[in-house]
Length: 398
Ligand code: NAP
Ligand code: MG
Image (cartoon, rainbow, N blue to C red):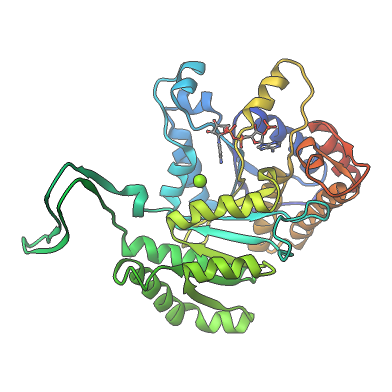
């Protein structure tokens, strides 16, 4: 059997701990036997990030801008304990944050739906994808505690020196204050990423804010989304048979709970933070969530939504058997391969990505799965496999 050939490389970002182990197994068992895999390799493992003063992370993001498609393994975001553990020169920033800032992208998270892992919400039949705006609002806010009576004002000094002010509140006693902002440019990028991703995946797009209460702040989000839709995407959406739908956030929440799924739910930063945890846990398992960062100019970085599974890694190092779920990491690869195949007009590569996903789903639906899924499945008589055997079982189907 001749291997599938590629044209353009995929940017490969290797990572840390247990997911780094899975990464190699996936390549050895499920990819390189079938594809003449072309990647440009960047080692984002913490040790190498430290050696390069984190330059490697920046370079991998720049390569993604150049080639358009990347696949990323989970990486450690260092904290004080990690600085000690790895004897780091500095507490390096989150690689995902660095990459997101360079690509100016939006993160889309979607669950992988399989029979036997049933959502807690009975009506959900298809995945719900959350698109979280990842800039500003409460995440870049300034806060103050007020000790007693006084006047709080919102003051804006324009570049020409002119001043506008609004009274926030005349405090009669102690209280709290918060000031936050967002940028039209960031909301515009977000809007385009959402519309492009909806077109790409042929799913309806929902967007919700609280514009009835927040008549300037949230209303600006609503207006920018609508204007970009009307001028740039309306016709394309009509041709694809998909819709863009705006509603109030509380109405959206109520509709989501009664829906079948199968759409993208675009959320402001805080709503996306909260709702993505609700949606992912209600769909069953963090190990079954995929994540893709999409830039407004059409670059894609695929990854699993979970972390490096540290606890399993230490078991692995101690020579104990692990049963770590590799599904989201496999789907990160299949997502990147499919996108590469689409961009380079390589139907064989697209078809391989489809087959790899089908083989993975069949393996689970036939009752062969890792421990995390075995604990929540509705299937009976399941076989619990270790990390390596699960990947080997998928290869049998492939
Ligand atoms: P985590 O790696 O997501 O794991 C948390 C727990 O969830 C695990 O201990 C495990 O539970 C379960 N789990 C997650 N993924 C699993 C999988 N594939 N198979 C089976 N079980 C799975 O989160 P963490 O332990 O809080 O973080 C570890 C490191 O990951 C941190 O250094 C953090 O900075 C990093 N992180 C990276 C990313 C990223 O690169 N995108 C995202 C999040 C976190 P049990 O232990 O109960 O089996
Ligand atoms: Mg959160």
